Image 1: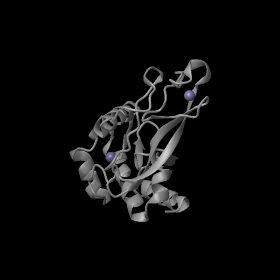
Image 2: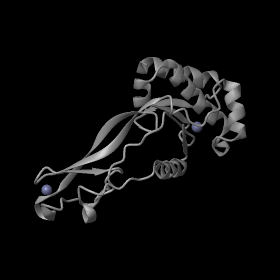
Image 3: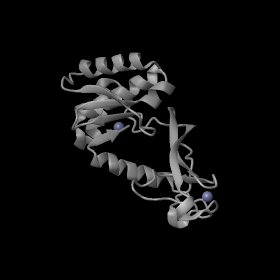
Image 4: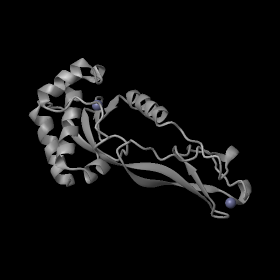
Amino acid sequence: MEFGVAERMGRELIAGHGLREWRFGWNRRKRALGLCRYREKRIELSLYFVRDNDERMVRETILHEVAHALAGEKAGHGVKWRAMCAKVGCKAERCDKGAAVMPYGRWRGRCVGCGKEYWRHRRPMRGAKYWCRTCGSEKGKVQFFMQVVEVRGNSKSENGGGRNSKQAQNSNVQNEPAQKIQKAQKAQRLAQGSFGF
Ligand SMILES: [Zn+2]
Ligand SMILES: [Zn+2]
């Protein structure tokens, strides 16, 4: 749906539920439809999610986050939050990603020497150097950039190789279980004091 319309709807729903100090915001997350940032008092929507979904899905997501804001951070997706969902009129579902269209990001790298491709599932570590096994550390610097692959929901994960300079190779793609990644992301979100859809 249109960004302007989504933003207006977000502001109206936030204000309409008495969240006076709360604001609406955007983010570029690819695996969370919406986000409730308690510290910043901000309800965010993913630009990618809004771009690719209809008003019903977006509305449902805003209300999901409004219920988080009203229930408080400690409530998580527990009883208190579920009661709040009933109050604001959204489904007390933990995750509606199955029906939402979300892009999936992964990292594609290319050796500046020979052009060979390398894939990483996770963001390349800052400050770490990656180089091509064939060309070596002098000539074979591997530059990574993000590749966005559209997938529907999170039913199927694209798996890239978890490679680094020590084990750069084009075979033996290591698959990370999607659950493990979700767990890590959840831990990260909790650490940031926010709650994803
Ligand atoms: Zn190379
Ligand atoms: Zn949630």
